[in-house]
View 1 (cartoon, helix red, strand yellow):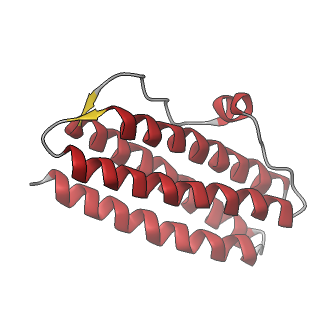
View 2 (cartoon, helix red, strand yellow; view 1 turned 180 degrees about the horizontal axis):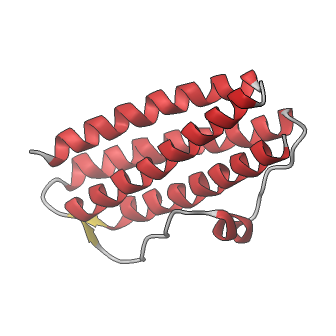
Length: 146
């Protein structure tokens, strides 16, 4: 279970850094589709915020200790922070796609390990994330073809 806890904390770290990154983009997005993109990014970070709480509580449910400081998150993330600068929509969506791919890889690997260890509670939780991230990625990629 310790390895699952470690992987869940890495996922929690990625979620926290991604949340901040999305907020940064929300504040700094520029371009002709500002209103639509601004709202969509807010929708994404609201959902990620819910996931942060869900994963932290899940770690506690399996007798683990969730990471809780920005320092912890930055040391355990595989998602790069956004720069604090104005950014155009195409760049934002390219980075969001890249980061959702990282999250999808996280949850897929956690599910595989949870299945091997017969931790079906963690495994079933990951199913929802796999479905959500796959759909979001499909939608974002469709938008990039426009």
